[in-house]
Length: 262
Length: 226
Image 1 (cartoon, each protein chain N blue to C red):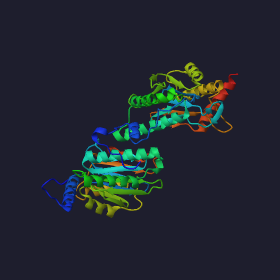
Image 2: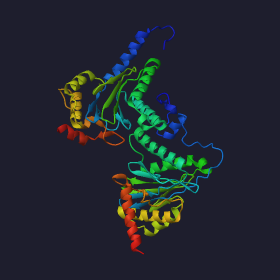
Image 3: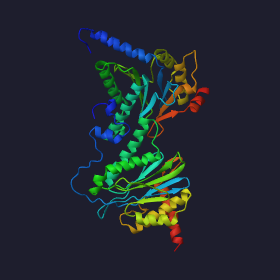
Image 4: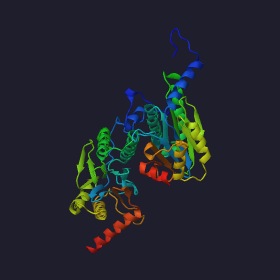
């Protein structure tokens, strides 16, 4: 990059960071790749609504075929102060998408002087997925969940997506990844409207545990290393990710419940 | 830009353009940036609460502009783009005020000599380092850059404001005293400026990744009555 990007009225890229990147010869999602890479979507991430907002959670395992390549992968990211994106799919493109998405939201906010609405953010992510469709066709699919606290409506909201950029708002919960079937069933059976944050967190932990129990590509709690699935909460106060210690405590409570039930 | 049958000497041409730009800038109110312990306060006289003179560029960098609104707002947006592209391509820590100030200088210098009309703007680029020390750059309509120490002022009445800032500034100012000092320096001895006529923002070193924060009217009012 050599000089300051200054545009005439006709060619101004506006608030779209992707257009600006492409204008400067940086294409974050190249879609003219030959061949096919089967990257799978080995993961469990989920989001569920609670009385004060939403809980977003995800396991920490990354796999390459039958090998575990990372034990402390982060799959839940704050998109901005009041929203989060959780990813399943090919790790490289997924992390890239999260990065560009985060930058896009902040870029819009700075150019326009006010942030996008939650709906606008969800549509923006759908647009990026649509742009990634050629890559998805070649095996590098990304299937995220987007959740946040809608300040205008004073409620938590969550969105599920498909690889074509289809955007589906869910009322109760959303899951994604190879363990999503198991996690989804657990959340479905335990879900009630107006769960407290604590109840929603324990339900998320229960769902992640069962997913890890059934799905080889989903990692469970790892007390020896002190690595626990990521738990995060978004309320009117903003996004907060629980520390490994806090997450470990929720798992410890779940273990007591599990042992007591035997 | 010579036309057939007319000759204007280069000296005269530059002089005319400079006069034109200065006239535009001097019509507006001043804006000042002042360093305090752990931050920089940016204060502008601005009756509008939507058309901003002070804005966020990047994690630790702020922008202030006076003169013609559409022109300095174009510069602001170009600055955001420059910073975001650089941060994307390299890393967030690689984005700094010095290189942005140089880019602005190049651009304003280019426009001053080559375009029909110079930009009627004066801008300041401020950066707060991780250790709390400040960098302030003042860039003029013709691309002149100045690296200012502790405080700077742009806009119509800047000389008398600078005198008042020099008188009142001290090493250990806290945020609120810095805002009060700057507001009083902008106002001068003969008038007071109310919170609703002010636009106040700070770059606070200790406020996480994004250091830029606006202070709303009620916060400014509370600071001014102290």
